[in-house]
Image 1 (cartoon, rainbow, N blue to C red):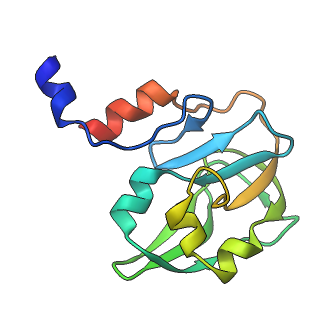
Image 2: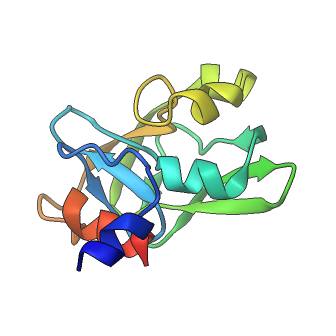
Length: 134
């Protein structure tokens, strides 16, 4: 087991957040809940150059593609792991996608959503860390 731990990437996985296997984090401790992409996703995408945000007021279901993230490597959809109504979008991140690259768990949030489901099927920080370590 110690050999596995030596190979884990040194990525930040804050314990107070919940995660999807699509590399999206949810902070349900805030109202509305905050959603963004993980440091692992940022690492895989590289420097973001454009973010296409969802419209405020849009009702989404878990599994919906709600935003588009464009980096020098690829264009990747952001798949929401939770259902609800989008209440805020981070226009600062749209104006300067580097905010997401530099601070994915803070200023780099993507949108805030009024959750429809109080118990979304998300991963704990430990479960998520194990997925990205594989």
